[in-house]
Amino acid sequence: MVLTGADIFAEVLVEQGVETLFGYPGGAVLNLYDALYKYSGKIRHIMTAHEQGAAHAADGYARATGKTGVVLATSGPGATNLVTGIATAYMDSIPMVAITGNVGTSLIGRDSFQEVYIAGITMPITKHNFVVRKVDELADILRDAFRIAQTGRKGPVLVDIPKDVTGATAEFTPVKPQIPVYKTELDGQELARAAQVIGNARRPVIYFGGGVAASEAGEELYALAKKAEIPATYTMMAAGVLSYGDPLNLGLLGMHGCRTTNRAVNEADLVLAIGTRFSDRVALNTEKFAKNAAILQIDIDPSEVNKNVEVDYSLVGDVKQILQALLPLVKDAKHTEWMTQIQAWQAQDYRPKDDKYRIRPHQLIGKMCELAGPDALYVTDVGQHQMWATQYIRHVKPRSFLTSGGLGTMGFGYGAAIGAKLAVGESRPVIHITGDGSFHMNLNEACTAVSYELPVITVIFNNTVLGMVRQWQTAFYGKRYSSTDPHRKTNYVKLAEGFGAKGYHCETLDAFSAAFAEALKSKGPVWIECVIDKDEKVLPMIPAGGSIEDMIMD
Image (cartoon, rainbow, N blue to C red; front, side, top):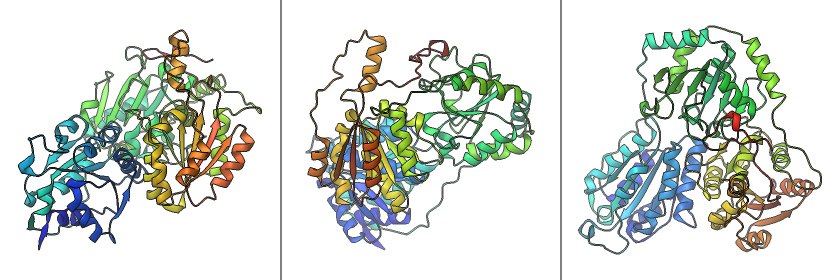
């Protein structure tokens, strides 16, 4: 059948199983929006307040489901407003297809109104990007974009479509969508050697990251840890893969990880690094990281092997497939002496003190988890609140803690929470945890949550300052608080009501408990402002470039 480029665009989205699309209209994409009008029974379009919010929403949708998030924006500023969201997805290996309109092909390169070379701008922050020049190439390019986003190490792909291409016509042939399959080439000798290395270890530790969640390999990882009795620690991107409270779950590793996890890696004789990249927030000092251990790295991306830390052994491929092949080769084992030593260290870990007169972050998060229940999905922005959430949420499920790990994007949270809520529906509460600094960056997405009647609960940790920057200024800059107190007078209750949401102001844990219980019953968005002391710190903390010997505990 002969269709316009715009209709081909819509047909391919349907073909690829896209049910929800986030975006904002504009001149260069009017043909595409006209097609979406016709296809509204098959594709739900969510219009955000800002294109960056749409990108974060597509990202949140992808993180919550494992599906490819899709975002649509017009040319020029519409396209450039996606850049931060695309970079966020790229750094955390999130599958996303970003579709941008552009000026007509005859106007490209003439500094036309709202023209930018978005393919060039986004080249360093996408797995691949395309500029469509002919309408008869459009369908296959879109299909390639979805395939690339989900194949191998996942990530964002951009497709730029000039306006005249969307209006031209071409023959369209429907194609049954192909589920991307990544087949790992397994080397029997390498697997056997890895199993032997694991079997010979006396003080092994598993250190795993977001690649385990992306590969849906949580069960296999736990089976390995259980079979060989190997304690495990994780990065922020892998929170929830191992259940809170499990004896083998040591907790968070790195800059704000507990002393035991960092010490266990420091004293280990084998570190199994699975689906993780030794970032500078974990391997703060690459010369001293796991200095007593052999390192076995398992990752889908060969470029990550020996990139940040030199490893002794490596297995390259899909984590789930490798663990499935490795498990039968690993012998049952017990490491009683090692586990006893770890338990002794755990007794000395940092534990914050409760306070009945003011809100302490750990108590606030504990109450949140108690009231929201185990099915809650948490989304954070970036800063102190993010780290407190990572430390104290009782993570019990994968894909239930969404945060900007690699890029550290303040303002990520509200859009991502909207995307996540649209993904999970009414079955699960979605809690957006933010700080007053991060929240001011994209709080305009409140109008999106109100318009679509999305009961996202936003908990604002309001310490009136840029808390994480201030903490560093306290520790390393002689308490010279340069530009970390913005002196804002925002009334969150009135502002929420102005958007059409419900707002609460809380100065005690009891007040928060009452407000949160009411918010869980709400049919629309709720903001809960919680007053936090500006001198609250995220502890423990290892300074950048430091090691466990440099850990700050108070």
